[in-house]
Image 1 (cartoon, rainbow, N blue to C red):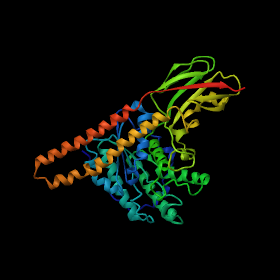
Image 2: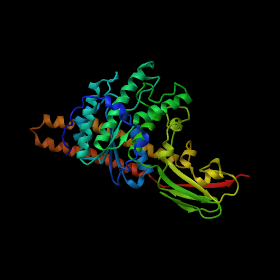
Image 3: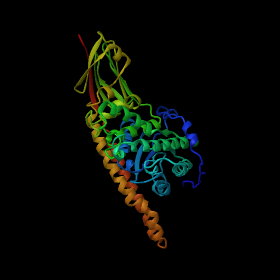
Image 4: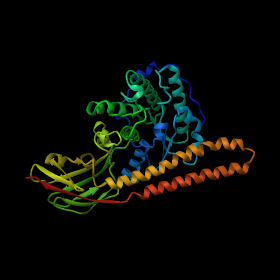
Length: 428
């Protein structure tokens, strides 16, 4: 049972300007996930879009399969932190998460300039959420709100600057709560704001990072959000190493094994996937376009190829029918296959299949929670004299979660081993 301890109000927010923020701090506390954990992904309509939540689940299942995690998204359109505070005990019942990510603030800010009352209300609700979850034994990855688009939020002009300032203030409050409660922090705001500056400079102001409406991102913006939360979980991004010896046997580790291979070639079977991107290099409707503007591959998606005993100064690496040229120094140090072959690689099809399965699962979860589970307390109260009805509601609750668990098993069943080949050919 979650505790009902209430935290006091804060009166002054001026001290928040001194709070130190860094996206790189997120993972400094180490990995917060343990084998078999249940991960709840909580937030407002941006969470209910089922995109960053999908990317988080995809990463945890496909890139970290050994952890055997279960995920569920709890997005609710239009919700504030206070809304989740009121439904959390009922809605998390039975799933009983070990790790919870929270992403509130977009609606909490009221779409107006920041003021002390807004800050107090947000602090109180968020602090109570974290306090209750902490008392239940869960780790809370306290997420900041995201940003709004420089051009598309309310038609541009000064409105995006105004509301990004509000969201930055709420980010500071979320960071303060994480520090006070000794919980990890996910700096969603800075991940989005920083990438948006770089992407618009390179691709033009019409390239939306936070959505055409200014605050509901497309897949590109959701990748940035997933990046912040995965970093907040303390993941180190090492997805394995493949070593090709030009004069001997190849080897692999970290979820990959060599089936055969020597003298510059290797046939490999992998039970761990790299994260794969989609879309084109200029469209916000996919994840590929934003990848150059966030260190996702460097921090979270490193599938390393090392080449030993190369004669000559350069070589062609062929992986799954795609070829690129690298220097001897690069290959000896190790190249990141996931980054160098982003547009297409041998895992792309299998990853798309997993994407479809996770989407189907999360599409069940929204009506499960919003259409049924959240309404159970009110229905039980209306029919409180009928003990048989109350008991049946609990049977129904259990049935919903059993179906959700069957979707989880369906997702896991999609994780089939991928066989792929690497060949290294010296350039003359």
